[in-house]
Length: 132
Image (cartoon, rainbow, N blue to C red; front, side, top):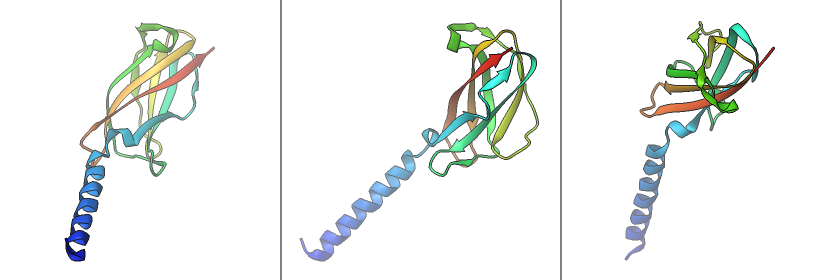
């Protein structure tokens, strides 16, 4: 094998590895974070989550959130759910909800999202503590 052939083979291998790692980038590159983990117990509680791109730490605006669920799974009461509805966004990458929390304790906000330019669905669970 000549130097030129070896160089071309090495370059092709590197290019293939780079394209594979780009193809593998996906939903795991994003995470949901609570703006505040302690929230008010009761009707009209406000929950806010930020969707972040892990590599850059930047918030992700324009995602479409769906299949949201709010339950008391952290306190071993998954069957206890709370009504919630989306509120208008006030800053990029922050998604707000108004919820009717029926008791103090741990609440898991489960969410799926479609991120612009990303084919995979991002899934997350954010835990909030409802306090009286």
